[in-house]
Image (tube, rainbow, N blue to C red):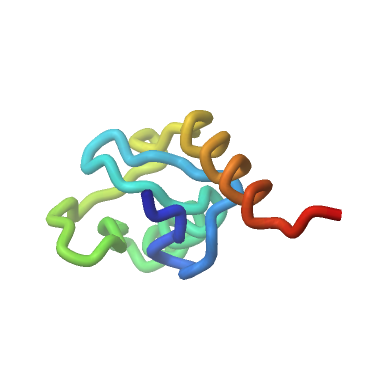
Length: 82
């Protein structure tokens, strides 16, 4: 599974899942995107390439502990032993 946020292009630390389209983002990055769009009276759309979800709302986002554990586990495995 790809743990890179489509917004920041960095491995996620606090992943949230979009209940509508199923994509994952770094929590702070997607919330910043939503706030930025709201300031311009526009809807935030899913930043994942090819996604047709044109309206991402805060209420669509849920923390995903399973993905967070998978990211943490992968990070531990990739660190050199000390």
